[in-house]
Structures are given as C-alpha cells and as structure tokens.
Image (cartoon, rainbow, N blue to C red):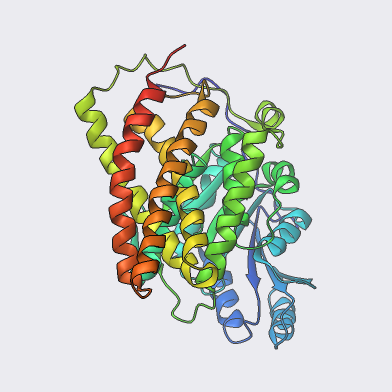
Length: 407
C-alpha cells in the first residue's frame, strides 16, 4: 500500500559555514568535566561523516560551575560551535530556546554523555533532510538495538513507554531516549503548544506530533548508559505522571488545536482498512489476560515508585487510576477490536466504573491488612495482587458488555 500524499520538500544544502543545515543542541547543567570531550568528539564526527554544513549549540541550563567558561572556550576554538546561556534550569526549556533561535532547517539534540553511538546521527536526520519524515527519534527498545544499562532503568523505561501506549495511545516506542531531531518548520508550529520545561518535554512534543498526523521516524540505536547520570528517577517519574495526566486531560477536553494542526501540517490519511472480523471469546480472554499482566506490572511499578513520597493509599489511587485508563484503551483496541473515536468517551466512563470497583477492592484489602498486621511491603504487594485478580474478572465482564453494546 502506498501513501496518498505528497512528501514535504527536501532540505537543500547551502554552501558556507553560516548556513548550517543541521543544528545539534547539547543541553548541559554543571558539566565542566564532560563538555569539552563531548563537543570535540561530536565536532570531529560531524566534520568527517556529515555531508552538509552543521553547527553545534551548547545550551547551558544555568550552570553554577565552570561549564559556561568551557562552553565559551569551545566556541572560540571551533567556529561551528555556539553557546546559549539560560538563567533557569530545565532540559525542555533549553531545547525550546535553542531550537526557536536556530536558523537551521533541521534541529537535533543529544545528551552530553554521548550514550548513543554517533553512527546513528546521519540515519536519524536523513529522513528529515529528504522530506520523508517530520520528526526522528532514537529507540533503545527495538529488537536490533544494543543497549547496556541496569535492570532497574530497563524496567522503568519499558513500563513508562507501555503506560504511554495505553494512556495516550502513543505509537512511538521510546519517548525518553536523548537522541532526537525535528524539522524546523514543524518545530515552529509545535513548540508553542508544549508546556513542559523539563524531562516530559520530549513525550509531550511527540504526542502532539502524532496527533497532528506527522510522521515520526525511529532509528534503532546502540546505547551505553552513563553510570554518572544525575537524573532523580523518582522525581522524574512523578513529574512525568503529572505530565501524562495534564496532557491526557487537554486531549480529552479538546483544549489543543489538533484539527488545525492536522490540516496545516499533517499528512493525508491512507485508505481505510477492511472491516475487522470480530474477535471470539477465547481470543478475547487471552488478549485480556495479556493486557492485564502488562497493566498489573505497570501498576505495581507505579505503586512502588509513589509509595515512598505519597504513602500507601494515595500511591494505590494514583497507580490504579493511570493504569485503568491505559488498560481500557488497550483492551478497547486489542481485546475487543474497537477502533476510532465512536463511543470512546462512554467506554472510558465504563472503564472508570470498573476502576472504582477495583479501587474499592484494593483499598479495602490495604485497610484490612493495615488493621490486622504491621505494615509490610511484601504483604501489601501480595494483598494488592490478590485484590487485582478479583477485580480483573469483574473488569472483563464489564468491558465486554460495554464494547459489545452498539446502540
């Protein structure tokens, strides 16, 4: 099947150091030791391997060490290097400022630790240069990616992206890989709509791009995790959960001008696929069980992350609400074969009814446990798993009745 729309115009390379085709932004905060080796290595790679004029922009997020001096020295040493100094922290804030000010037609960014193999840079930006795609992301979750990182980060990354698929219907595989690119004309339209200034910036940008009908290209990358990473995983996870809730609410209420964006930027739809054959009960049960296992793992992960700062009952409420929305969306599409927006609001309301019953079961089990035994994480998790199994059977019956109802 072929696309029914014309591609965007290809980016034309122009001679001269002042007309860079690609601007690679490196956001930094207190990186005086790593900044010099990173930029020199990136500059050497682009000089040797990239066939177009380029520039590198160091976006300093209000560093309080020697980072600004190192950045200025690099700009004096290498003519393709520029420096942007910000007075406030935030990776999203730095990218918004650097990308908005850049004259280059293709914009990219990468983390200062260069965890991603630079050999993936040209495959990342080539579809944007040709007009084939609008955004490009590196993915560590493809089967052909080679990744070296701890089990904890691997589980959190996969759980987060699974949550995005359920809660926001994301179709991209790796939202938080620090290796992305975007066409400047697309960035000019999307950036004013992205509210986050921190780590959720990437996810929000990608969700808006997907909903606007833009094409997101994915490149499997080789990735070696930085053991000196200073990211606060718990704080970042909680901020991302708040971002998912805010963005989901904006999508549901129609607060974002998605129709206008799609008409202005989106690529035309492909012909509709043939009508799907209804899925039989045995397959529904199998698919519901698979979605349930994934939802339970995501629920337990979110509960463990939120248990410390919030307490058991609020953590249970937050984890169950988020995974309930994701569970309904996944079962609607995968288990019961329902697509499109028809009845989606009613389906989610009925999913929330199942959520309320599940909340009553899980909260009740926690209350009984805390009233009869001393608090214990293993006992809490065991009680929650048992209660969730009971809630799962009830959820299947409620959702099956809702999805098969066709007034």
